[in-house]
Amino acid sequence: MKKVLVLASVGAFLLSLSGVSLAQEKAPAPAAPPAAPKMEAPAAPKAEAPAAPKEEVKKTKKQKAKEAKEAKAAKAAKKQKADEATAAQKKKADEAQKAKKLKSDEAAAAKKQKADEAQKAKKLKAEEDKKDK
Image 1 (cartoon, one colour):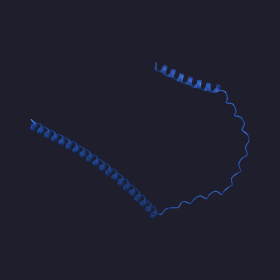
Image 2 (image 1 turned 45 degrees about the vertical axis):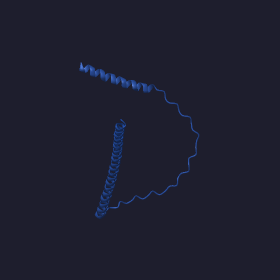
Image 3 (image 1 turned 180 degrees about the horizontal axis):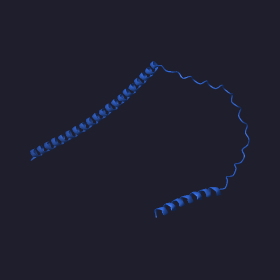
Image 4 (image 1 turned 90 degrees about the vertical axis):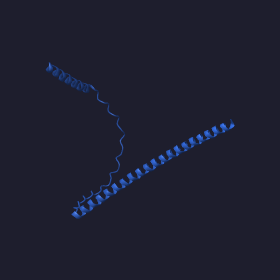
């Protein structure tokens, strides 16, 4: 049964391929584009002598060591700059957090002061009411 399924699938696949190729054969050829008017060719550029190939300069051990040292220094400077930027961002975030806390503390203090004043006013009113009676 499996063989029949495999053969049927392969047959269907091959027939689909042949159908595609038949469709390609029956397609009409595209029409030739209209002839463009003839244009004069631009003047030929002046021929320049080809550049001589650059000779590779062999680097000495001192030069290689110097370049490696410079690369290492550049990498260290880049790392230091990144660290400074990170520190600056952290400092800015800390300052923002402190400012936010200070603002909320001030708001809480103002709210407490208002509540105290309201309570004092209430007590004074109660005392005045007692005196009036």
